[in-house]
Length: 324
Ligand SMILES: NC(=O)c1ccc[n+]([C@@H]2O[C@H](COP(=O)([O-])OP(=O)(O)OC[C@H]3O[C@@H](n4cnc5c(N)ncnc54)[C@H](OP(=O)(O)O)[C@@H]3O)[C@@H](O)[C@H]2O)c1
Image (cartoon, rainbow, N blue to C red):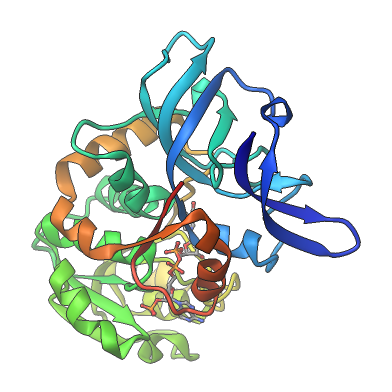
């Protein structure tokens, strides 16, 4: 038997800690003892039943996991290997990692980088690995340190915190946008040169605004993304990965056709293995582990539901790590 955060939908939605039989685990060629999981925005949506993240019921929650292989028929993995899982529909269509055990496809797994512990890998989690994918997308566009200010929206959140830490470690002048007045010092410790109030970005604005940003990492979407585009300098780029404010994008073609601004979409869930491996290698090289420790709020599996509600209410800073 193993403990898991089980999501069920019959007449009504229910989330509860359940004791499940191992024979109920889904098909897969690698079985893990999960040591740590985490709460991302998507986990919050799923656990609080806020949007249709889960598409198969019952579902074990948890889109991320880090642990040790206990069984494997996959050529890449053997018993004792330490691995990381992000996305691939886990916690959505395949039982997830907010559980003591998970059975997964070996093709989904990344080897734990030597630089990180299993706990640190989950402090990074999908949020941090997506922040890295955003930075890599900007770099592919030609964005380099020293060209000008880089804006990070949703800065005190998971994606935002890791993006601030990464970009500043890479030498960029980072401007962090947050709605949390109490977290300005936190963001400066992560490396932000300047912190702005998110209210300056979240309301409807002009089509064209003063050119401020060489690049943007946006995890907020909606009006914030529209204003970020309208404030991006000629030839700049915006990496968009999230919808914390909303999934709409009330903009026009003007930033694209008159300022040559590029909007770069970033998805982590189905990102190919080679790109993930590259992102994790870059995280191991570029993310300062002491800054990662600043971001961590560690909880137990039995606290995950309460913390997921806090996350949805905007009461969480940085990254939640769940010790299984
Ligand atoms: N594309 C992908 O593959 C991918 C991967 C990971 C995450 N995401 C998405 O990225 C977003 C952030 O994820 P996360 O895990 O970092 O979540 P998170 O930790 O909850 O952070 C979200 C942050 O957004 C800001 N925010 C929240 N509500 C807002 C609102 N109404 N208006 C403006 N700002 C708001 C808050 O930052 P401040 O308080 O500092 O303003 C909050 O901390 C989510 O939409 C998530 O689904 C996408």
